[in-house]
Image (cartoon, rainbow over all chains, first blue to last red; front, side, top):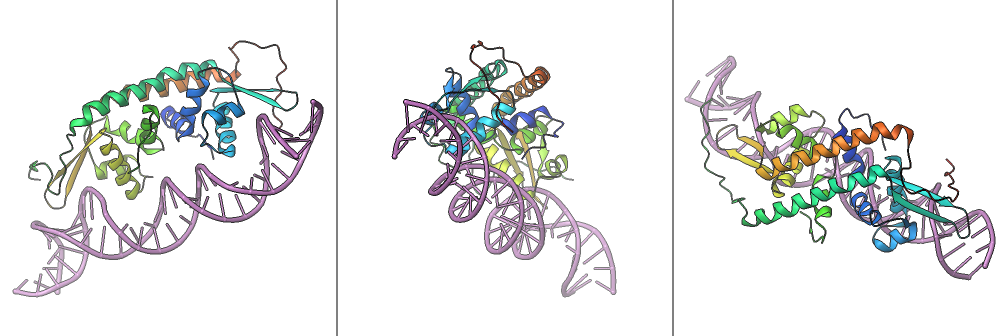
Length: 124
Length: 124
DNA sequence: TCGTGGTTACAAAAAGGTGCGTAATTTACA
DNA sequence: TGTAAATTACGCACCTTTTTGTAACCACGA
């Protein structure tokens, strides 16, 4: 699933953050340490399997730390690493950008139609 | 496209930026106006289908503007909207965060509050 | 038996690739 | 003079690949 042989750091981050779950999980984890079952409650639509996969991915990326405590039943806690915490404001900024964009976008400059804007092509 | 009924702006942005192409296309488009065929040359591994789909998505999101010039053969140019330009530094910040993280991540740290509890690593 | 965190096998769904068709004009060529 | 080919930016149908969901199973002790 990962070669991560990309020369571009942006490609690499997006490989990690892409999809519905990563940013959502980070969102919940920034509230503090969470157990596996907490995260499932926070986000009831994620499947058991996806949650483990996504957490593993975030762990591998150094965003989340997994702590396993022996005991019965088994207890595992997840929390953001310091890198994970530094990521949070960047993600938030994207959300804010989107909100701002959505507002301005209400007066849709996308005056679509069959005939597009009359732009004249230069002779070439 | 999708319902986009998400209450969370972050979920919405990620829906747009997720995947290999959106940030890559934005990257090339920040260099200036590009034609469809330019973008294919910039990124030879994207299929024409994907390119149209992704461009349409970015257009719908208000990130890219599509300009169609009549003439034969048809000519279409794409460029970032002002919102698109404002997005660029946010994406760049993610890339920088990743680079910084990758460096420090070589010694996978735990700069968080240390619980004295034993931490057990997963078998694998 | 239940509950925790996790794995695996199989099935369904989504994403993506390939290749053909199309428009309106110009050029290529017999 | 007739016509076939090429051009650009796609849409569409079909098929493969990847991702995700479902469900069953595991360990352990209360």
